[in-house]
Length: 267
Image 1 (tube, rainbow, N blue to C red):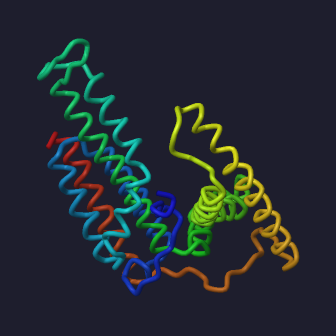
Image 2 (cartoon, one colour):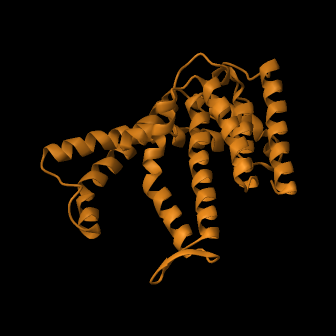
């Protein structure tokens, strides 16, 4: 399951999404997340499905690679669905003792499952088609107006980018440590919840040590290269909007407009 986490990973490919400006992709991801919560009926989610499928096709990222990231949230997804089905009041369709399934619970569970799934896929699509450096530059340019309020935009963007980049690195490190501990006789599967928590100590201690060591090495490398943030820092590849980026903005706002219309009309 560790290797199935796709958020934070980058998949190199020659696609339209990979060539787009990171600012457009960041705004597009935000628009898609908003639309997922604006839509509240299944016809609306069908529109979101078509839009997301089109973006996946344009990204040229393998569908299997895209959807394997859902394996990491299967347990959370199941808990969310079960709780909504059995704890939502409404018209009772089935009852056994204190347990009951309502029509409203089924609809709410379906909406929550779709929203959670699309949030993970949409976020993964952005990181899979955008390098950490591009994410940093895009965030910094989008948040630049906050510089007038003396907000350290460059530092914030850099921290977010590094944190995002460390996700796959730490996942890979966790996988290596887990295999090494299993080879030494560690058992992470059997026992109750308390026992499983105790069994995680041989995994968490070396993982934290490795994470702090990597953070220290990164800080020393940045200091050795005289790195410093601020307004006077230049970029090797300045961001410039091209025709495809302007077209993407038109598509985004048209899509969000459709979502708002569906919400108002009640479709």
